[in-house]
Length: 392
Image (cartoon, rainbow, N blue to C red; front, top):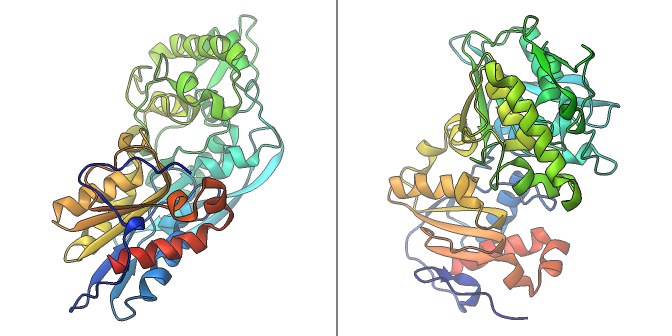
């Protein structure tokens, strides 16, 4: 296997050999995101901790699994929040059949109630039997939001990652009371292809935002349309073929044109409008506001305070690449670490971009000898990564 590129200023600890014991005990914060398709954030953190303890059993380890608005966000917040309750709900999945889902109720000491809804649990890729780029939709996401509103939450946090569709959030808006009509005054079909027929939208039955608003949690800042838009960048992940890309883009453009007088005054070029197949745009049109998912989750789980006074922070994700800088969890963790003058190490399944700002970087692909081998035994190689970092 060819050796991966070595990035100037970053130690690739997989190439080090031999222990170098520190004389004093350390306080280490382990705050990774999930390794998509391989391990949850909690499992990643536990495996890294096991590897570290095999070398330095007496160090203080604080496990703080992270998320950035993608899959696993609800689990991450629930694990870190003592005053949280999982609220079961049955919604219409992205292909039309009923699926069990849940949203999270967070209760603050002052009585404020926040509802966290994760799109991936209601309208995500994992709920598809096969790609359905023309007809997959976000109706279930909107139904879960509606359930939280009916429960009486004061605020919403909406995690946008992992969408199965490119419907611009149209399905979610329909669930919230918007009426999307064609030239004959009939409801347009759900899904991206149906947006090509939209001529008007009736907002009169749209449910209002909760009293303290709705915050969108996203790990991307892409606009709705264009070369950095939902179809160009993320369409293939949802099954949009090259020969259908122009039609899918045109459908979103038509949707944006018809929604130009939306309640939230959202514009298709707004950062994050292209998140989750354009669901960011639909929710902005409702009146929600876009926030960094990683930054919001870090604050919600108290990560900034945990990092203060630490000797090392370890973070990671399945693939560290050019999109990571757009708002992924590891970049937010290293930002917090730098602010507290704490060294930060990166562990990733693959490292395909210079890990700027990290003191050390470990690639599981390099450790295992290939990406196939690392994916076959991710927890084993994560434990080995933790061991190598402890030896550094």
